[in-house]
Length: 205
Image (cartoon, helix red, strand yellow):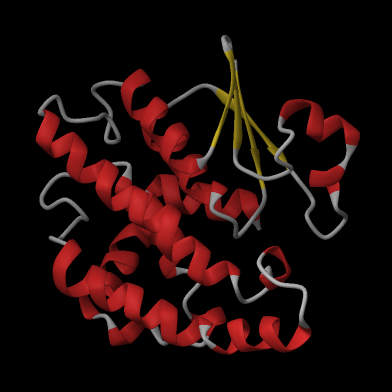
């Protein structure tokens, strides 16, 4: 059976939703970040990175959201999160998810994780002050050039949709009003109506 290690409000939410959308049989194990459970010896045996998500499969452990989402999409064909067979359409999904992972997530992380990049308190503070501006720039690009609608890739729901929802949910905490981006905001409202999303948010508390 699959087992997903997750933490509420983290990027693991996307993989959690994808598993629900796929109708997968899985266990979800909550990792308490406040209690530093991700640094525990037990968890580090599964994922030496000390982060979530981590998905335990019959063949081994997969980490990093884009990889886990792709695995779910490939494994559960014929479900709402199954991957397109067309190479170009698949590449479009990968491009979008890679941008969220490599750019948007990093911009967000500067708010609380500045010590990953600097030791000088003044530098860390300067990075923190840039978060709202950087996140706004990222979502402006998504809104105007990357988001098709009504779903990320157009008429078909995909693994990119729960991933975008997760990042949209971080905006207010980063000092950005998500209503500034009408298409993205409408997407988050549409996502909130999906049973898989409701179940995961209820489980996560």
